[in-house]
Image 1 (spheres, rainbow, N blue to C red):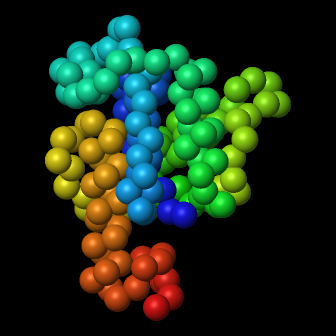
Image 2: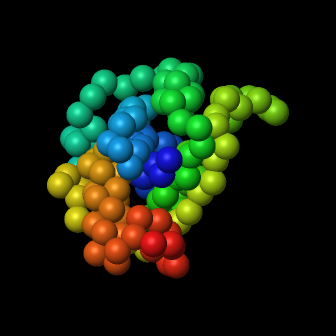
Length: 150
């Protein structure tokens, strides 16, 4: 299953604030960790758009494990490398310990998306999914846009 990801964080190198995954068949994961000291740009452009209460990292990890457990395998698609970085960090629960997941592969691609609510991770992940589906439908296949199969 292809799953499209987006995240928001507190500036370059800052803490994770929210994480969203949208599957190709529209199943949704969206959680917010929050941020007690956002940089000014994040305070103005991200924090007002979170749209749900904050949870703990442990709760996010438990819910992500449950969400990913629905799938036999997962191919994570991102349009920015830090989204993959944060996803991988969230998988880790301690030294040598991680959440249980199906087999995972990952891809970072350049996409020309139009989000309905920029800097809201759920809206941005949905926009990436929609862009990917529409691009592949226009090319006549559903697969890797860089050389998929018909």
